Length: 502
Image 1 (cartoon, rainbow, N blue to C red):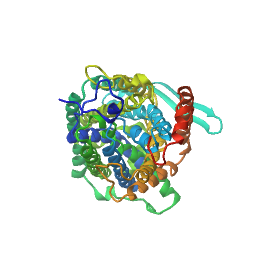
Image 2: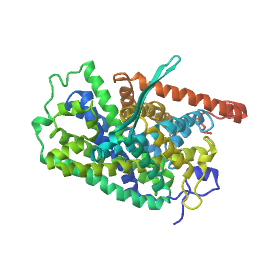
Image 3: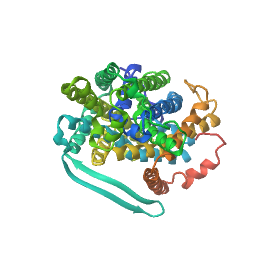
Image 4: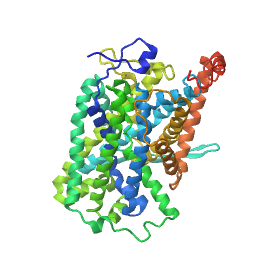
């Protein structure tokens, strides 16, 4: 087939081109695999515990609304700028590729060096947790230690290192995903559809099992004052929305591989919106069905024990017997690996796009001569994600969501409105519905999640440290290369006409 060069490759010329081999079906399944992953199978006890009852469903509902509003931002940007890299390309264009956008897009890739491996590691850890239901010896611990690093002005960074037998399984799964992706994108699309079939079969079986043994009295046994609009209610809602946000994330995965998507102006928006609506419906059905079988008090109590990591296995064992618990554990392991597979694929294209622009380490721009994929970026991402498997799953989820919101999602949502104002005539194959309402809802929702949680300052400190270090690295690098805000390039930018993108 004839390869169509992406925006980045057109701009720079030379080198092997990426292949536009992903259609609507493959793009939607890749998104859904990333979204479903292991998240909804391990987080319902955490959401119920945070909310203090079945009103935790509000977290899922509001999380879906937030995902849809933010998804409309990604849909318009992805259709207008369909090259590889996703937010890296959007932020650069929004804020000026030779001015502030150079710094902001660099910071995006810099934070992704931390948050993307965290996301992949969470899927690998979820895989090992459900594997421990089948092989309990995987829970055997070898090392556990709290870490504390004082940071001037910001306070102390805290974390916990945990090494069990399951840790090594999680690392192995991550590296296996890299091995499976070390090939041409056209064969990856076929693998993706095969994995997606297992994901959908698993979640549909759980929904059917729950609904056929459903008790409305059990599912909707709200505690007294469940909907009293107190500070506790909003703190619980914020904590549950943080977890729900983690579970919904992945709807934008197609944007990171935009340079390999067929007819991106139509395919990217459709894949985004289809995956959000389908997964939101599946999540709400699945979680209501679980609450209809397992009392919420039991789920909340399990949030403080290791059994929270395989609550769905417990449900299936209770409904059908021991064999069902083992079978669904194996299927959820399949689902977790599908998520790891999709995440590795999407995120590995971001450092590649940045390096191709000269805004990240040059080695990441290398493309495999036969398979024509960014193999250095893929391998590096997998190795760092494997190292993150030494952290606790709950810590990984919280750090991931806060870092990503602060250094990517908020900046992109605000920048989306800025771009509409600065460049109203920019070609846009897709336009946000009801602009600017969804963008404003997305901004408000992300801010709410950041501040309406107990002890939210801890993860914010992580994000601030990453941001400050990234700015320092960029400024040192820019000074040496005479780039913005230093040197002749910076002076030239001052002479540009207002509104020119550079």
